[in-house]
Image 1 (cartoon, rainbow, N blue to C red):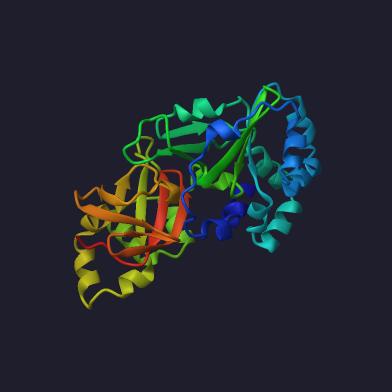
Image 2 (cartoon, one colour):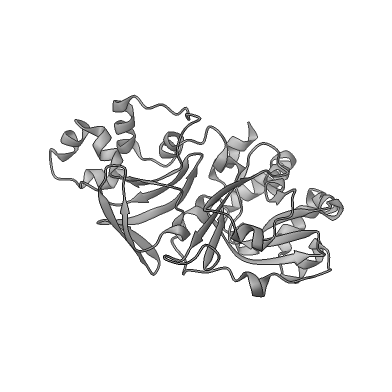
Length: 312
C-alpha cells in the first residue's frame, strides 16, 4: 500500500518543537474575496502548492468545485520534508495525488462553523479513504466562542480566507500526511517506528496488540524514551515491569492534545495522578520530563516523547 511509504513524510516537520502560541483571529482573516482559489494561493506566495496542483492537474478540479475547503501548506512546510522523500513523492503520481487530495474537504467550512465545534471533529477528504482530525483548543477559562487555537492533524491553522463565497482556504504550517490517521497507524505501530522499545515491553507484558478496538477513547500518551528508562536507578525498571499497567496509566491523559493544545497547569492521568504541565518558550514539561519528540499522530490520538519516566 503506497500510504505506507509516506510514514516518514513529516518526520522533520513533526520533530519541530513548540512555536509561540498563535490564536487564530477569524474576524480579520476571513475576507470576502472574489478571486479564484489559484489566485488566492498565488497572492499568498504558495508557489510550491500551486506547482503541485498543476502537476497533478488538480487545479482544474478545484476550479470546478461548487463548495470546498482547502488546507494550504506554506512553502516552508514543503521545505521541511526530507529532500529525498520529496523527490520520491514527486516521482509517484498516485502518491502525490493522494497527498494533495488529502488537503481538500468537499464541503465549505466557514470559520464561524469551526468556532462552534467542541474540541474534536473528523472531516472527509477528496482522498476518499482517510479523514482529517480537526481540534479546537480554547484559552483556559474562556468561553467556547473566543480564543481558539485550531489544528488539523496537529498542524496549526494560522489564517483563513474566503474565496468567492463558494469555499475557504486555511493556511497551515505543515504538510498533512494521510498515513497519520490510517486505521493501522496505532499507538503500538508508532512506538515501534520511533524506537520506543522499552515502553513497548510494558504493552507486551499486558498482552496488548496493535489492533484498535472500535470503542477506543481518544487519548494523549507521554511516552518515555529508551534513554529515559535507562537513566532509572538500578532495579527500578524491573519493579516497574512487575506492575506494567500502573506505569502506563501514569503517562496517559484523556483527549487529543497536540503541542498547541497544551496549557500550563495540572492534568489528571489515567492513574489518578495529577501531573503538572508547564508550557515554556520552545517546549513543554510534563511532570519532571521534557517533551523531546512532540506530535506523533496515531489513530487513537497523539504521542509526545519525553525524556524521563513519571513514577508517581
